[in-house]
Image (cartoon, rainbow, N blue to C red; front, side):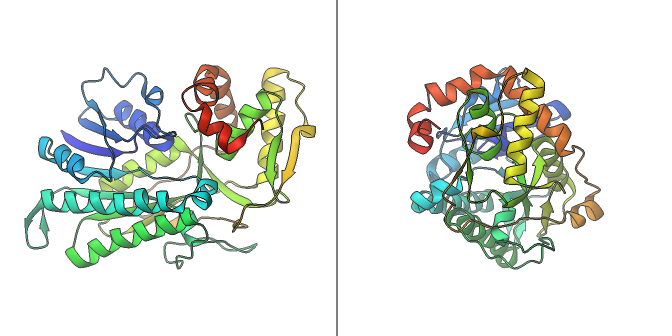
Length: 352
């Protein structure tokens, strides 16, 4: 039985990954390590807590002693590092927090895993792997044409993306210097269940359902490539099992949309699904974000060719599934916006 150390597993993508893996594989064990900051929520993992192949550890990846203790008590085969501060707006306000978690925390994990997996000089226990979950934002911004490839030079534009790029470079340095077994995945914007309502899609869904304004940065024409989170989880599983050591894999959905198109689509589907009278008068254009990248577009050619992965969920299908999930889980959203995380949410978004 392989043991996965999943960091940040109470967050959006991490919790979806744990659900996906426990459902798909009966012969694995998952140890979920999460600091439980505002974006980490154990409600995301309801149904997992009684699974004998799952264990939660409340710890910070920046806490060296805690990480060492986890490795000393368990024979870890894979580290899947989802743990990250990821909200661009907050990185502009508090960049030092992002450097600490995203860079120093990653180094902690690398060092401990290397120490426990080493069996000789530049030799490691067979079958072990460190997977760094990264983002297409490390590549910077695209023009109207072209796509990010794994060979695209890194050119991050925000403190968040710079911290992720720094972590990526360290992971690759451990491969080059120590022959440490690593992979990096860089994904496009994820959406789906359990996403904290500070990100575009859940924020717009929640605000529309509550007849609040829908704040859109600048002219709303910034373009992102959208990936349904379950498709991302499938790709990560494939990279862990079959990815070539030392390689980077881009994971993209080929679902490019402008932000304003996303908002209008959400309004249309909410109206269709609920009969609500929401309309585009709720849209409010606000001052653009500092350093706002104009377009992201990611080419998943390599992972398709090497591992056979392709995105299965079109945006039209995925966005309906996502809206339905938020409609069916209003209690989860209320706990975020009115309960445990009310102070943070109001600090960031006020009454919008």
